[in-house]
Each structure stands twice: as structure tokens, then as C-alpha cells.
Image (cartoon, rainbow, N blue to C red):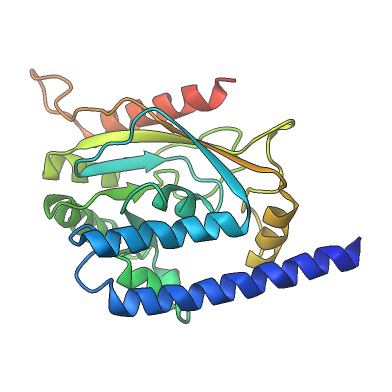
Length: 253
């Protein structure tokens, strides 16, 4: 059994490496002017992320309708695998920690794909990210942020940090909450969460064990930033509304 698991891990790593190479080729030739500005680049972006999901035999089920106009998406965060799951739906820009930008090849690929990076803990980092997200939304792109600021076990939603939701107000776009689930007979598939002191290799092993790998995306009702025309909408209000909507759907069986 251990030999079989090791063999599967080796095969997955090989396929991921080959897929990464194909992504580098894709990024070099097609992702030059933004994924939301060219139909060809967008199609390749979606197809490449779908390929990652196929490597792990992920069965993705969508509920509700995803916005097609520039939107700020907020979603609960369970694993790095959340990103290709959502990115195979339509061209999106993700906000990620700045460390990833320095990863060999992966950082370059993420940068070419339009990932926005935040240097958490550094003075002025949140303001810089807010400006970059706002600019991306105003130029016609859609951005995904994980307001919890960390991954969780998928059973509940942590407090949302609302500062970056100000971008929706600045850019005058809607916010759409998304609830992500990895359903399992135990409630949440225990092999998926990328938490605590897990390494990337631990995560790969978990995803291999997560068979079948069921994924649910619930696209919830968009939130209009003009909630109350008698007073100014705040990012705190938007964070609370988004959090409550996602938590309610997560608790729903």
C-alpha cells in the first residue's frame, strides 16, 4: 500500500511538473497583455487551470450564477487547490501573499497570469494592494480575495478583514460572495485543508488520498455597494454581509 501511494505521488508530481512547463510556455506566448483583455489568453488560462483539476480528478459542481462583469469576488479559503478550482470558471486575478512571487518559475508564472501580491505585515502594504485591486477592477478585470487571510479546515469561516473590500466601493463594482465546499461523508473532506504546519508535499499526498475529490462552488447573490442610499456604504458592512452569506451557505447541508 505504501509503495502504491509513493508511486501515485511520483506520478502526480511528474504530471504537475509537465503541466507547469506547459504553463510557462503558455504564459510566455499568450499572457502578455492581461488575461481579461484577450479572448485567446483567457481561453488558455481557463484550460490550463482545468488541467490541474483534472490531474487530481476533481469533480466540480457549480450552484448559482457567476458574474460576468468586472466583480470583486470574496471566498472562504481551504487550500491552494481553491485557486485552480475557481480559475477554471473564468479569467480571474487572485490576491496572493508576496512570498509566492519569489518562488522559482511558479512566481513568474503567477505574475504573468495577473496575480496581485500583498506583503502582509509591511507598512503600507494593504493600501498598495487596495490601489492595485481597484485599478484592476477599473480596467475591466475581476479580482478574487480571501478575506480570512489564511486557510481553514473548511468547517467554518473565520473573521473577514474588510480593508480590501474598499476596492469595490472605489471601483463602483459589485461584490459576489462564493462559498467553497469539499463535501465528504465526514462533512468536509479531511484530506484537502492546507493548514497548520503542513508542507506542500503533505498537501499533494492529501489530494491524492481525497478520492473521490468532490468540490462545490456556490455563487451567492451579488452585493450592491449602494446598500443604503441615505448613508455611505463601508467596507466593514460589506465584510459582514459577505461573511454572513458564505457562513450560512457553508452551514447548509
